[in-house]
Length: 163
Image (tube, rainbow, N blue to C red; front, side, top):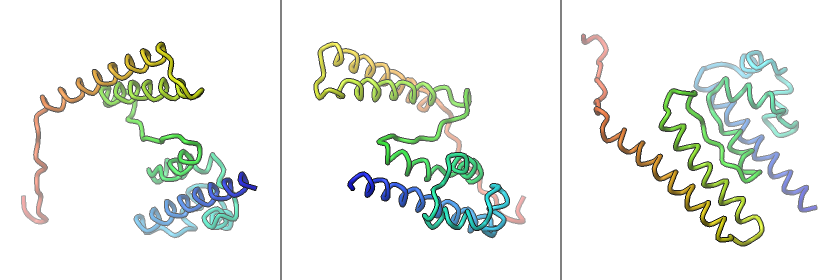
């Protein structure tokens, strides 16, 4: 019975996130739900059922909606159900310092998660976690140095009708 309630709560959370993403997108773009349904290839009735939680949202639709709207709220809702953290990734090579920080902090969390599976952390596991933390700190320090060295530019104000 407990797993049914948990699954139900998870389905509801995903449906709520789906509803919010679709609604916010339609408001922002001044599109109708019919236009949104057409853009995603989902029949309007099916879209409505998914938004209300009457039908599950298939993974391919979640990907399509996430890519169309640029919002990852649905993925975050699903991640929270599985104990995972969902973060947007920069485009490959666009910000190598961010790639490095994410990779290194992911290594820390992975090492820690693996170590605590049995409820204890051995000396070898502790040494691995500390090594991963030090590598993540080095990546963060490198990012900090890039930020400190960067030329700070103030945004230019542009007024309508003024050159």
